[in-house]
Length: 98
Image 1: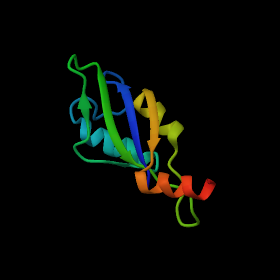
Image 2: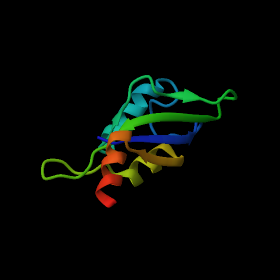
Image 3: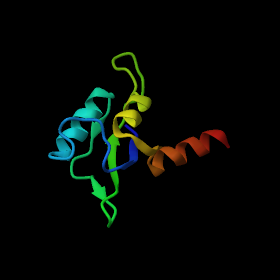
Image 4: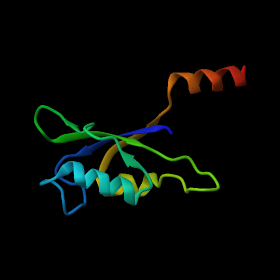
């Protein structure tokens, strides 16, 4: 399950729990988007304006739909959203290409 990393304006996630319970808001936003918020991954820049959070994302298969990255980005009002793969998977892909 690849990890997603979101960078967003800390004043604008579109959820009723934000900013009173930001972790609950991120859990709910992730669930609505077919992802899973990684608990306690929420951090903020020193001035509190930018938030960062990690998510477990889902690749499509017969049993479950893929993470809806557009929905996730819109709900967070994301400035940036990236998907990261682990080093073993990257190495396997490189060997298969070469």
